[in-house]
Image 1 (cartoon, rainbow, N blue to C red):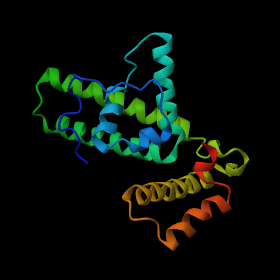
Image 2 (image 1 turned 90 degrees about the vertical axis):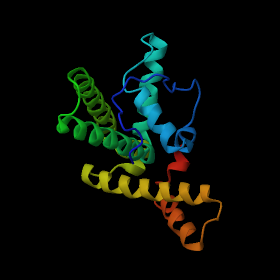
Image 3 (image 1 turned 90 degrees about the horizontal axis):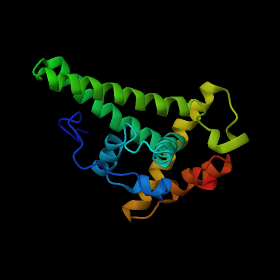
Length: 182
C-alpha cells in the first residue's frame, strides 16, 4: 500500500472523527484519507468525556463492520511493516527511532482493539451468527469478502452481473447480509 513513507511522523493536520457518520461514510473514504483518519486517531486527541466517547465509538465502528475491520487491518499492517523496516535499517536518528517505536506500539494497540472486538465476529447478526468461534471467523471472512465485492461493483458504475447478484443473494438467504443489520 505504501500510503505514508514515515507514518510515525507527527500528525500535523489530523483528520478528525466526524460528529455524525455511518459505516458507509467510512467505507466510502478513499484509501489515503481513510489511512490518515486511522493514523490521526490511534490515540484519543480530545480527552473530554465526549471526545473519548467519540474515539471509542469510531474504533467500535471499525471493529464491528467486517469490511471496515479488514480495511483497518490492512492500513495498520502497512504502517507496521513500514515502521519495522525503518527501525531494522538502523538509519533512524535516536529521537526518530524512539518516536517510531512509540508509533509501532500505538498501531499494535489499535490492532488489538480491532481483534478484541472481532472475537465476536458475527455479533452484529444476533442469533443468525451464533456459530462456534472457528466457524464464526471463517464465515465472517466470507461475508466480509462478499460485502466488499458488492461495494466495489456498486461503486464501479458498471452494474452487477447475474452472477454478482446470485452471490449477494446468498448472504440474504443465510440471513447474514450486513446491509440488513444497519
